[in-house]
Image 1: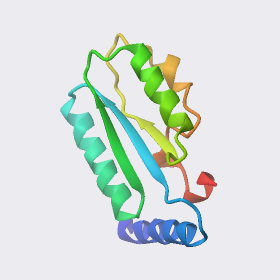
Image 2: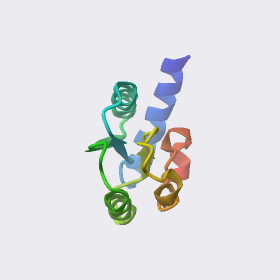
Image 3: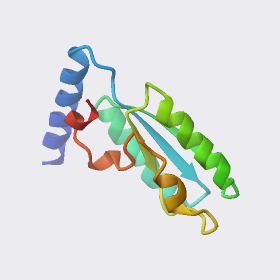
Length: 119
């Protein structure tokens, strides 16, 4: 069943691109060195590639400042190639998660979005 869903998504992405639209691009922000988070993100990258979605990981150390995360989010929001932003949780405790999660306009929970929502 998972393979069938993957094929359907890949077909949707291919159709989207064949209509002259830009290939979907997922930007993932990963803060810190949580092994489970790194594994999860690697799987997201692999899954995205399998269906034809471009992706990137933006790695930041666990002591990254709130201001730097806001700046990254601002840059991604105006980047025309970015279709979605995934912020890998958990974040270090000192970061106010809601302060900058609300800054994203591209769609934080891209893993829950359908290709048609990228229009």
